[in-house]
Image (tube, rainbow, N blue to C red; front, top):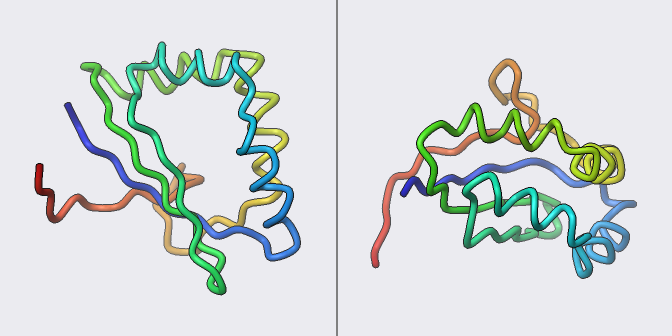
Amino acid sequence: MRRMGLCIGLKAEAIAEYKRVHAAVWPDVLEVISRANISNYSIFLREPENLLFAYWEYHGSDFAQDAARMGESSAMRKWWELCDPMQKPLPTRADGEWWAAMEDVFHLD
């Protein structure tokens, strides 16, 4: 199992809508995430900085392949079309990243 953390900005004017849509994530999207071997998925918001922190546990063996399969889902693409305009990627993210990956430096079970 691999723990993964990512962060991104959230536009101030989109906070209420982002919370609203995430209070009722579409079942098809949840199914796609689960099929991608992702579990224990959470997103946290830090205001007033308007930073989102996502955490999940990946239980597969090829994250790049599972992520690509998620992108093939029409439900997931529609979800991203809804959510991406509300987000504000960090200028320091790596090439090809939307959400910036974070280093796992500590964990306690």
